[in-house]
Image: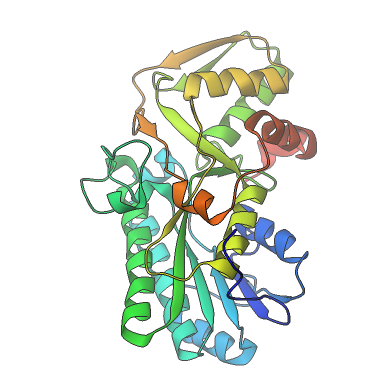
Length: 318
């Protein structure tokens, strides 16, 4: 187990993006530590406005920042709103990282995404695969913004000696996920589709693509635990992958979700819709060598989401 080099006791920690799925999981995880959690909602602070971020940071004076705030979405959302995904994510990360430097924040953890890696990256994907090939076109706008965030953290570390680090989570799911079919990722979309089909008595569900792509999933609470682990124990320029180390085909994922939800109908595929990258499994060797491992299995995690989310209200949620 890697040694604790940044103890959290008595620290003031700002979780930027605390209302999102990952940010709220981080807040839950930090509740078990002897620290003060700082938050600022959209009604208080527009992270896209540099002056606002700097003013808030000067007043709050956090000791550490976990940068989980981002504009996120699936293939359809990325393809439909490329300017929004690139601009808003660039502004959020640039404003917070620069303000953290100005305010002399002791440590910052930037949260990226597995989509930063090339479309044809080796599997499992090592951290060293970054910038070695073309990106997946369906989400390159978001990926480019996240790559810029990694490089910005590295630049402030190199030029100013800041203890700014980055973590790259795999596909996440859990409490508070986004179930809007226009902007959601594959797992919550499948949960919603299965629930609505079951309620409507449908005999089949059609899923995007061929069902052949393989994806890796990690519960948000496991991700939060890994992030706090890294905040306490990691200090280096290279980003660190955060994943489960296991992947599953979209078709098998659909079968698992439908089984948990209790939908017994047929699964049909729609090959006219894009598959995206055919396989995306990240190497978690570096994090495992430091002594961290996941605790929540995929079936257990999906079951927890289905049991604890208000599925009856999914149709109205945005």
